[in-house]
Image (cartoon, rainbow, N blue to C red; front, side):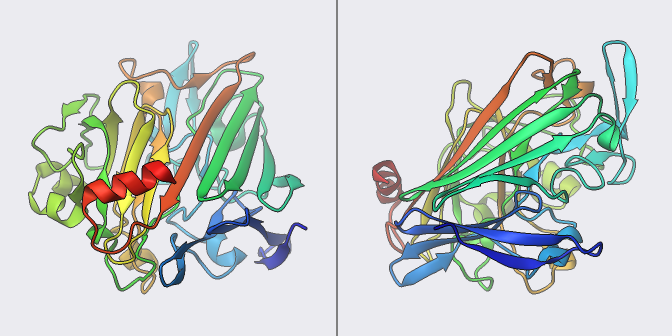
Length: 352
């Protein structure tokens, strides 16, 4: 039987609920009907259940959250420079919610909207959201479906959308990962591997400069597993510009695994599978100011290129009538144990 619990109310009185997902294996989750937020995720480690994502106390805290913890991002993940774009001969102006730019769908985006629960079983939750023409400045009506499901040690998020007028569309998922399960353990102590062939340098407003820079020999090269702390310690002008990692990694063509992450403290590892062409890497450095005491988490967001509607050289990010957008993000977990060699981590994830 599906389990649902109250998760508080918004200022206007609307109730928010947390929907439990349990596949009978080592993985359990709670997802909110507010923003499709992955609010809780536990994995059964060697010493018991370990919380894997950062979370907040109630609905009001999430609605006021400037960090986008756990949300399904839409319509457009990441940034659109100048909060404007031209499409089919017409200029559209979006809500500017980060200085003069547009970030993660705008003032409310999809992450501060109540989604409709269409189905909820023990290990599956289907949410839907209708984004009307003109919402946040976007053209056309868009219907979005997000399906969470748990199967053994795997959490799967299926995203699907269609529209009645051409619109920029680049959804993603925004959990903050700290597989140590302990806010006292830095998220930057995790090991990261990702098939990066390049990255997108940004300006002082974190808008891409328009080029794909070679990642080889830089702190943005994660083709071999690296501790994030050690990678950042190498130093790079782009880390100074962004205040740390807040960059889009361009993945090898045809890659279906975006990232592998491992905590040598808890011994838990994660693999993210998705066919997105890029992965936003954010080290959560603003959390110290936005949520003191919460600790830091690492965002690994499979997506298209930021500011793509204004960059003809970037892969297209326009959804048109008659098309159906589909993307699957799968998180696979294993517990190889603390202090393992990287080869053991990869073997455990392959078997999960």
